[in-house]
Length: 424
Image (cartoon, rainbow, N blue to C red; front, top):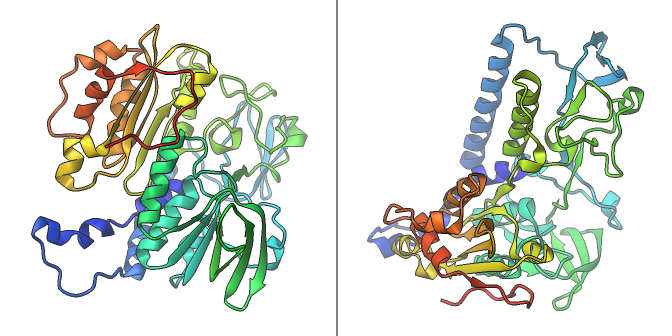
């Protein structure tokens, strides 16, 4: 299970409970979270899922499951413990792990990653998150809702810098509204032991140069688990970051060896890893000609409210030089969001002005991780904006406003994407 999905499954819906009176509900006394119970349930869900998959594999006819460290001996041989296995086709799917950045002092202080933070048996007094992208922000909100003080330190001027500026700004407003301190534009980040835990030194456009936390989470990316599996003995090429080099069919440079999942650098999610399997299986078993480049990228940021994303951002689309259509609507103008009293965020769609096909979209708001699939499906079907506008969506839903956004799309100016959230 991938890091940000672990975090997504542990989100706490504390905000609706705190707003119970808005809906006529009365909760006597202070609202608190039983963190031990929440952790126990999350562990149980993960363990059940893992056991189910393992049981299925072990019961599959013709499938032998070996547990142990595996390493190549040759292009057709893999050793697992004391057993040497030979096969004409070998598939590498070894996943990845959190990266430890070469920050000054990182070897002098205890630090957490996406796995070890889930094993904490007590609530941090002050969690400092180094890295303002998906994993870092999900855990930041989780632990803030558990009751910890949280500070996020990010080198880029905005959080999740790969997104369009107005999306990043809207996410910053959501997190600040929950009391999470954001230190963006941070430079010269270093760590040092402190009597209260860990001191994080930063140079930022504003704010104190030192943040002292009881715990530090490093959330600055992931690296593939390829450094100890003897790829050199098999002649399998890797890139400078250790990812296995693959072509558009996920084949490596060595005939008979393929690489799937996180370790090939072509996706970092459970759904892309599964799609890797679908591509390889279809090509080898069904005579298909499926390619990774045909895949339309979709993903989600599991904060509350979530961000659903598919395809290009406006910034990326502008780099193609094609004429664009852009439509945007704040969630304050989405009936379902108003009814639920959850109006943070916005939805945005970018299309090719000539072909009228959707290039990408973002839905930041209640139900955004589900509503984005309507656009993802239309993009996979290569349908036009006009076809989507003729759809009759169900009322009241978040998705029903997508055709309205498409109908109101305007030609994009030559100026860069705005850094402001859409007006209400």
